[in-house]
Length: 149
Image (cartoon, helix red, strand yellow):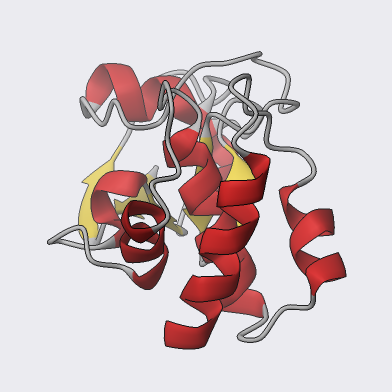
């Protein structure tokens, strides 16, 4: 199978049913993609496939053949994607475990809607769990990033 990960061509000849998350973490050492629930419910493993935010724990390798995958490591070479800058400015993270998934989900939203409404943000981010409860800062950062994106 061929795919592109963070702009680099890759090939994979292992189990086609292996979750994308494990390929990214174990074979490519892209550990920004976190394991949370393993059922696509918490959002810690969020990556982009062809620019759309998806839960990598429930996407299997055969389904990413000939697609472009972007992880938090590939979102911006220098860490200055508008969402990442807004996250720093709003001092969003507390423990930080969920933040890569939160950022990838927010960036996916802004890929689809340049100027999302409050309802768009709430709806898009609903599936990302933050055990520290940083939701107000996350919301604020997304609003700020939308102005820059």
